[in-house]
Length: 468
Image (cartoon, rainbow, N blue to C red; front, side, top):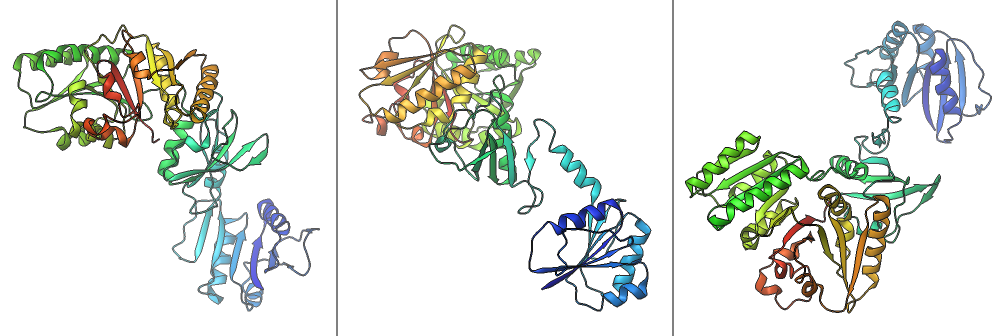
């Protein structure tokens, strides 16, 4: 049996003792000192021994401390009495662990005295009731936010998503609470509005997940970043295409209303550079690197330092194998612009595949479509396996109801790429996975429509990372 000494005075101490009597543990015996006696009906006499005296009396306290206690807990309502009680304990027991309810911002250099700040506990508990603030487990694990509870709002990007398609790297959904009932998660379980998710993972990752769950439309390019970066390598891009590329980037900048940064590497045309420099008058950041660099050497640094959430490149740059690898490695969305007009685009085109990567990026697709006023079109190749595709279509229909955004589903008997080539203008959105980084020659004989994205190279394309 482990002996624990509790020294109490005042209503907080009384409430603590009452809670202890309601907590079952056959391994502990509690010795309780009260300055004024109070009865606790639920206290088991075999486990609770009560004493009534002033703990600042050294003689009386020392007599009780002849027993071997593993811990002392002090919950008293007078700071001076607490300090004198600790001094009395230390005369008899030099190393005994003492836990003190601290209501006065007390300090103590004794390593075996633990001061529990009452104000911090109360403030933390009240914080849990604020809307749009994550509830973090304080007394479980290491207490740094590795366990988090999040309410899923009606307009969340997580609503009507299957758990199996949510990328969970360094975090997990371990439980769902719905209508005050616990539901164990499975790959096929669909998240509903007003579900409460219990998350476990790295605290920094969970903070990002919380923002993603609470995110509503109109935030893109967040949560990937806050700014837009147009990257121009004048060794790769045909110089005659640069003015049109810049105009289209300016249009996108105006639509998303986020800061635009134009980064030029390997500058080699003075006239074009001067024209781009003039955009500084329109609050556009122009960053020119006059040293001979390739994208790999500077790109990662630029994305981090400018907090980039969307990278814009020309089709020549995205076609470059090494550039494409760099773009994938930073895990931010990439808009590849063709020579077609962007302002006349009315539709977003999605080609369904056997995987469910489109469901993982569905919230971002709806966000982009909402901000740019695009229609959403899904192309379903009927000659392929349909089970996974039907679940993705169901998910998009559910989201269309939430966001009041109509979608069209086209059932194609021929390859959708051929059908899309007949359209005049559109933006194709594609999950940005590692398979898109392979060289084009290795994808020529593939039947995977995502690997064959370059077949629609004449159109604008947005590549969105599937990882959160």
